[in-house]
Image: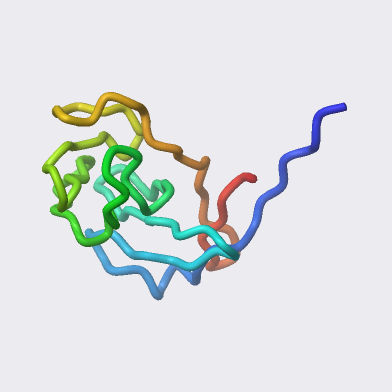
Length: 105
């Protein structure tokens, strides 16, 4: 039987870096929360290509660029948009509820 998904608090919304990416420790996971023109998005913080911390990369609108090899991802979907990245990054459905950024896990 499949496990039911639940919303979990990640960080207070007012603690986010505005129009930027914020690194969050979430248990043993490192997350990146992106404040974009169309809302908040969340992914694992480590690049699946080289393991670099995406929060140290260049962020512009909806695109995060890995600081190690300059591969880029669309934070809305996790899709790679620039070589050398080829695999989609892990993203989480994200919402703000009662002042908390939450992800569906």
